[in-house]
Length: 115
Image (cartoon, rainbow, N blue to C red; front, side):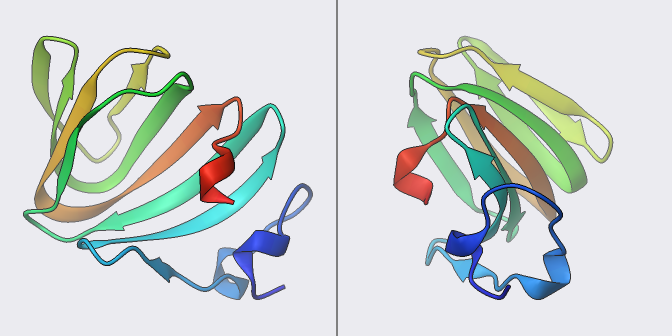
């Protein structure tokens, strides 16, 4: 399949998915989803800002590459390849990409607005 919106469950080959250009220095591929969970791959250019926001979804993220400054609540830390973070639902958080990289993000329940 080449359209990420057709992917729901089962085996996923990232090479068969097109990047979605988000127009703000980020691109993403939806890797799979069902009502309880969504997983996606995000690529960030250096200097990209993910503004302070919150959502009711639990978010678990894994830094594949790059360097990011992540704020969760009142705590800000720099994270690099191999690090991760978890944001409880309803907690304000933000991101700043210091060195271009990729993050795998998992949300529960699904972020309907992403599919």
